[in-house]
Image (cartoon, rainbow, N blue to C red; front, side):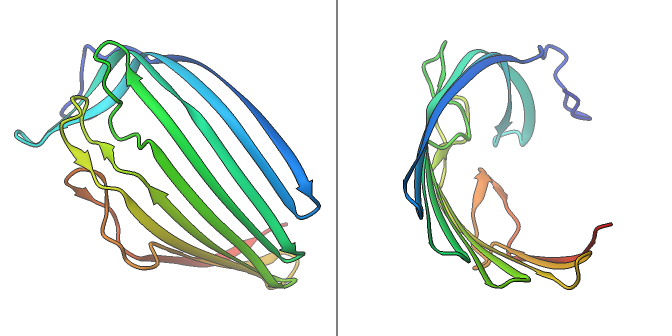
Length: 197
């Protein structure tokens, strides 16, 4: 892996093996529930580490690591133009040599997504993401706080081939970190036209 100025010449290529198994069931015409179990094993997992004392970033290998968990969801469609889906993911990670958790991999994540089409040509989307706290380092000595973010999006079919879209990330302008000491972007808006032929 190439990081100009601070690469690691001893870095080994990462390999992994994994599997998942899931089930989905339509309970009623308008209600679907599902769950998936996943399990991944890594040899020489490549991770990024940051030393706040020296302000240096470095990549290194974890010889033997594991990630496993379950993702469950419920999707309900109370009307033809409205879909609501709630998803929960529980992930257990482990460095099998140190018995510590892998850095920046939260145990719990939740998502609520609402898709609404008030008219045939207009589609809107509201998304709430909730992320649990996690450890920032491989020694599990420093935590990154959990956070919640709301995103919005919409699209309008002007014609069969011309589509306008807009997206607002971090609608409430929340301050949060995914990596300790490195803030993320505040509210950001995007828009444009998409042409299809």
